[in-house]
Length: 166
Image (cartoon, rainbow, N blue to C red):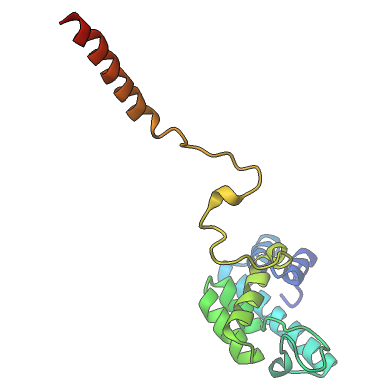
């Protein structure tokens, strides 16, 4: 198969490598390995053609390069690593290909995995430490002291009533 289905090409454009493989497999009847290889070939050929048309290499893909001409992109080899579920390998490949630092390459790969989350500003690492800071979150378990209080109240009442009768 030389051409992928249009839906698979659209999935690749969105960065959904696995979805593109699934679509290719469903539409063509190929096995998993063949459809994965077809999607990888397509992704590599398209990325290579875009790089030649734009006149740049991955080594120029700095996140904040001096000219500010274009943002960094995830190389096709890193996309293939992501498709295999190897996120660390994808970050390493992206770092090697783009020259980005670890944090920038990780953000770029994370944005590839979840494009919607890339629009949200990075939260501090302690943001998830207190889930009650979320707007609209209702506290649960605020009455952990209640059983202790009830037992104490019963003990006081028993002492008052039984102590007077004796």
